[in-house]
Length: 117
Image (cartoon, rainbow, N blue to C red; front, side, top):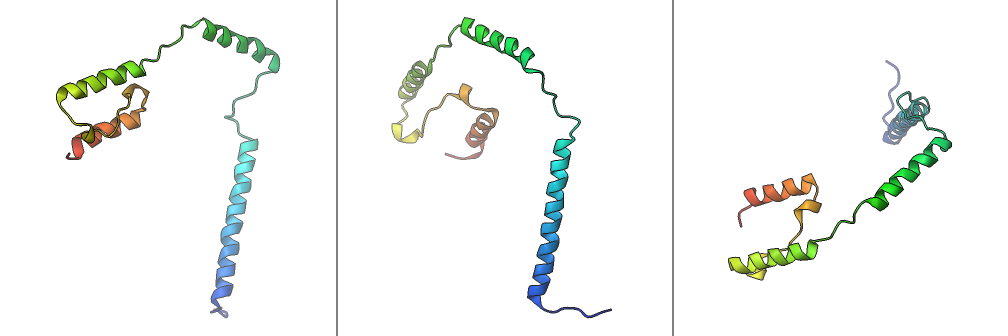
């Protein structure tokens, strides 16, 4: 076996060159794969996209406007809380669950079953 270096700075520099060299090679491979990606969606010509874009605008204009019932729902929740006899100190906040995502709904359900109050 040949001479082994014991200089820690030289070992660190060699290791950093190896690590960053591998990262650069991986970055180049990723760029190459992005260029030759066979699964990428092909772009359609601009002529075909123009008439298709007009149809959703017309459909959106014809659709009825959705009524926002959030104030009414908040009033009903407030009335139910007042009827149950709970104090306002025991309520953190009120939110409408229909606007929440699945993760938020699951988190709220788990918090109600796991955490003691």
